[in-house]
Length: 386
Image (cartoon, one colour):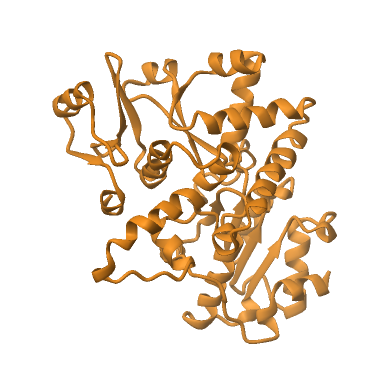
């Protein structure tokens, strides 16, 4: 095991610097919780950049905070060679290598922590009995659910999203001067097509996105939940991508795919838990929300486009606005058969109109509905200002 730990922590033996692109908004959040004792979970879609973010933060701990590298331990817990070891056994081996007592503070980075069965109880023991700050990651929301409440009051979660437009430009090493502001529109069109999965943005290899989708569906859904008919699950995802930005009910999904409503509900849940999709409820009281159709959005428009082809720019634009508003808990507005795209929890009413305008009925509802702020977002300039 010692060789694996050294390979995973090159800063123990040599000068270490992060060579990728920094995602400043997430690094800022990590710095803000550094002094807090809570366990920090990084969640989000597979390959969205959680591991890179950890290593970037490790470099900053060493270079900016002056932390001695031997007090920083990173390990990916889904390594096959570590399959038979508990987290405690792995951490004990780390402490043994550096002759560290349990009283000496260490910074623990546990990648794919949910690959270990009893991780909640082990993390609770670390939190209660040892001097450490823990950062952990998972690509499954369902596996992060703490049914035994071991970590209640001891954790906080940061969801890592695909690259936003500014990050996309950064990864592409594109710097637009004020005099060339007209170029934003061209690059935004590219962003609408590419999406924000970091590796794909850097390489442009479409097969990477297709393989990512296949791996998540096959390993995290079909294999994990022992589903016999894997093809229907793949068809289910295609249908969701085709209908992104539209209203969907479980009955409709079930009818189209000729499966039971219960199966449709379960499959939908699985896709949400792996962060491949998000859903949005109708604005209003809870009982009406639960009975009404949901709107579906892709977690990344590049993944959507691999499935559907690059078409329906209006739907793609709306999807990107949803991703930008997600942390403001948006819902859709539906009154007397007229729909407006988003009303956020803090009172911002938005209608997405990519290079188009509201129809008369939408305009009437838009004008009449009481909101703290109202915006029609119909291009890259409006999008950037959100």
